[in-house]
Length: 217
Image 1 (cartoon, helix red, strand yellow):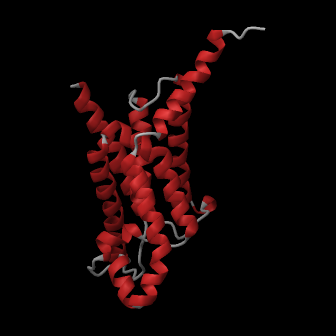
Image 2 (cartoon, rainbow, N blue to C red; image 1 turned 45 degrees about the vertical axis):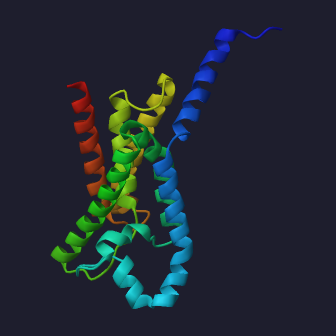
Image 3 (cartoon, rainbow, N blue to C red; image 1 turned 180 degrees about the vertical axis):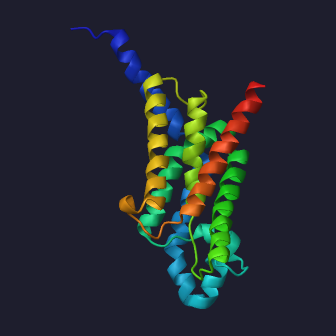
């Protein structure tokens, strides 16, 4: 029995969308590689430098230190790293397609550091002496950017169902993260840096609105 060519077209479009989605994203691939390698090497470097010196360089605290810039490389544990990598692979690839490699690299760096500095500012205001690590600000920024960009018709997708599903997914992820960070009854990870996450979300959504508006002007 011969196959109906029309019935195969949607699946082919979805396959083509997926191929484009996960292909041609060198910055995302590079960022994932750097974060994974750093996580593997960090314990050795901490042992060589000593905990205090390592913390001064790679953990952001209220007092000024290189950690204000470099803390984005470190992660509290494997779960923290895996969550951020998942965000980058799913949403970061969409943002990279929309922005191009150079602007996306700058976007990742800026939102990552901004999230760290926002959390440090909260430490200063509240007198907390703890530290923050991780690229969560950048990860959340990619989800917010992707939600806005997809809603505005950007992204490497020709299949409406794929686009709608990803918009719903991005919105749901952002909403669940806010609940996790700020609603005690639903907090799964109580040590989450809510201020860093919100900063990334606002910067990601805001930049997407500016970028999409500029293109339509």
